Length: 146
Image 1 (cartoon, rainbow, N blue to C red):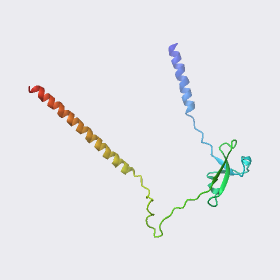
Image 2 (cartoon, rainbow, N blue to C red):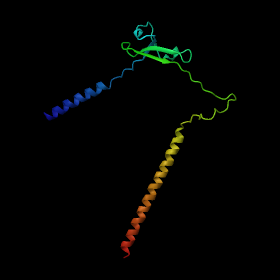
Image 3 (cartoon, one colour):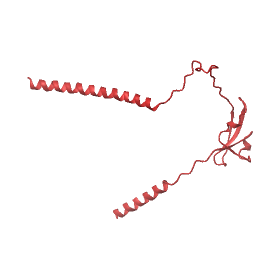
């Protein structure tokens, strides 16, 4: 009976695991439409996907949208358009002080730093072992030479 229970339990677990490993559905894409009041949510004829920033025509302009993932529950959201200006010098030189150039995250540099740290750690471990061995050697010489 115990053996039979184990076999049944194993079969149930295997069936449960294989069902969980099925193909996952893609997440629903968010849709939105322009609106002026919350009552207009979901009543538009056409919906847009992607970023609602396409509504912005000028800076400091207020825009409201209705947004949904399932086209049943809608969120009424409002915001202000803002545009960012990146300045550079006329002669094509370096940007003004205070702005640092973006650092290139080179994987080689990261590995070099990691190797240096590992070398330091290993050297410290070797030093510790040497001092420990020297201490043991001194104790052994004392015991042999009374």
